[in-house]
Amino acid sequence: MEPLVTIITPCYNSADFIRLTIDSVLEQTYSSWELIVIDDKSKDDTCNIIEEYAAQHSNIRLIKLEQNGGVANARNVGLKEAKGKYVAFLDSDDIWLKEKLAKQVSYMEEKSLPMTFCAYHRIDEAGKIISSKIEMPYNINYKQLLPHNVIIFSTSLTLRRAIGDTQFKKAGHEDWIFWLDIFKKSFSGYGINEALVQYRIRQGSVSSNKLKVIGFTWKIYRESEKLGFIESAYHFVRYAFSTVWKRLK
Image (cartoon, rainbow, N blue to C red; front, side, top):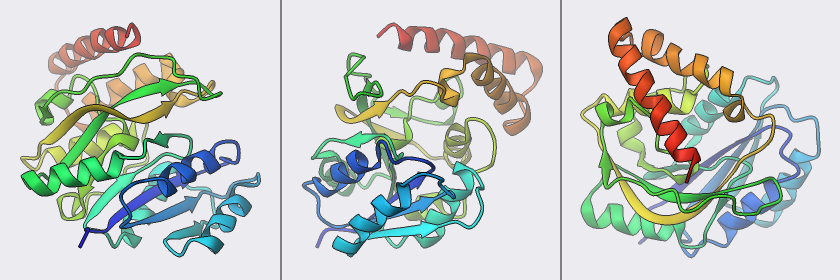
């Protein structure tokens, strides 16, 4: 029997892309999954679209939040509701290739791994591929994750018990902080160097605002990880170089 995978998708004003995202889940060759979509008080047609899918598929569920609390809060709500052995995060504008879950679950079950992530392509708002394959290392630990977060959330699959009681923090780069928090538990993630995800780059997103990203990164080193100034500066320089290198691919 295939182990259940809980897919957590936070969304806010996602009407332009949410159909493509949900369709990519429905097209998975792996069938044992539940999709929990947490709507963060959208003002567009997002909820109506999701409700259409939920009415047709018993393994798709919409949770409507009464107040807008941000993506960290939405993901925490999803974690509380997760029933699966594994948890996958899928952002509301990203797309999975058909064999994404099947290949990750098979690899993790065979090797008894706590967490995997995979390679991906960047796409633009129109869905056009705008990068070569972003390759992944064989594995990564806490120290290797400090210079740069190589794990795009939509590429990850994690044992629910490995996450434990770790919660998302409401801060810039909350995904990176989340991985650092769980990787501190003598935890390693394992890469699959096959592009199984299309990661959408949108104009005006936080990740596209370079000044905000710089500020968030420095805060992670100094406030979240409580590193000294010299060590923070060392990792920050490594982060800058790795970011420039990634953008050249």
